[in-house]
Amino acid sequence: MSEPESEQDVGGVLASYDNRARRRGSSFLVAGLLCLACAFAVAIQIANLPSVLRSRAESALASGDFSAAMKLFIRIRRIERESAPSEPKMRQIAQTGIGKHYERSKALFAKGQLRQALAEYAAGMALAQDYFFVFPTQQLLAPKNDDLMALLDTIRDDSCFMGKVHSLRSEWDKARARLQECEKQSSSRSSALLWQTYVFSITWDWDRATAALQKLLKASGIGSLLGDFEERSRGEQVTKTTIEALVPDGLHPAWTLVESLKWYDLSQLIERMGMHLVFSGKREIGSTGVLAPCDIVVRSAGDRNGDYGNILMNGADVSTNLRGYNLVAIDQNSGELLAADRFDAIARPKDNRKLEQVIGDLPSGTIVVLAAKGETKVNADLLGTFESIGATFAMKEPDRLEWSHCVIGAKGAPPGSALEMHGRGASFLEVCGPRDFGPDQDEIETYLKKKAADERRPVIYMSGKRLDSDLLFARP
Image 1 (cartoon, one colour):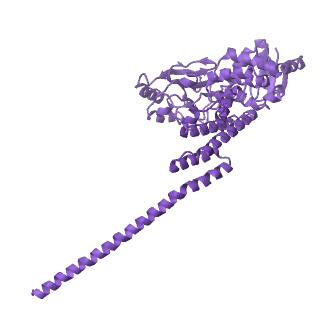
Image 2 (spheres, one colour; image 1 turned 120 degrees about the horizontal axis):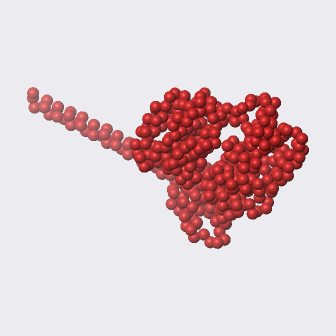
């Protein structure tokens, strides 16, 4: 190769490198400009974000969604890092929203819409929690004449309102105390006594439930109506009326409390009033296809909400009622008690495996009843075992160790087919065994006459728990 040719080749290579460097430099410049543009756009969006959020907050306020408005102002405050511009507005939202939720909750309680009423109360308290989480000193250092604190004190001091709230949250001790305070207010006495009867009945405090019911009969005028009804029915062995005809209009909205009681609860109350209750009841165990061969009642509660785990067969408690999962197995044909045990994995970790084995060894079709009591702990594998009796839940999450959980299911039933209830409050379930009468009214009346004569006391038949349900009264 000649020298000129070598120099030409070197020059070409250098020119190629120079062109590449220029292109690379141009690419870096373009990328840098794009990054600056993006950063500028993001900066503009961040700068405009508070105004966008504020607009959304005002729209939420206009629609009455105080919770959403509060959360949006909390975001605005975090972006702006200043409390002064947003605090008065947030305080206004808290005060207005809590007040409206409180009034709505009371109105819903008065209409008997209990679930909705409790939801409104929870929304108001959540609003207060959000506000005081951001401004804790407002609660700790509030002056005596502070409007927001005065509103919260008004809610807390409303014994009738708070008694109902505590009742629906299974906070029984608090409910009893507040409802006894409410009873002293003459304008609300009948309502307070009905709620007391409900609380004492659902917690199986029968002596106090009966005392509250007797006072309710006298205070509300139901006792006089019952007396008039009995007088009018004198000379007739069986007299027909409806529940609505015997319950004063003022108690109609709260009658949903009575509807939520189990037939067992009502029968215990009426038994202590010197009468016997007869009812048809429901024999089907969920959608398992199995019929109950006997009356089965189960209730469950964690440590803070009653601490019980009862399982009753025909009125007799066959559960150990000890901490952990209480289990009862019943033959679906004969109603024979096949097993009764409890499994406490907190004290004995191997109890989870033992519970799996016990359920696994039961014959197909066996009725299986579970009642969690107190603090309960299981492993994830046990959920599959519970699904084998038709359940869908197990107390395996750490935050649910004190939840209630009860099941009436059948071995081999598909998941979701069993009767099941669980939650932070107490849980209750019930199915009824076969009855000695059919659906025909003549057959029912014949049975009532015989029952009243045999027991030498009045017998009441209820076709249901609703106000429009039929009520038959048989005297001895």
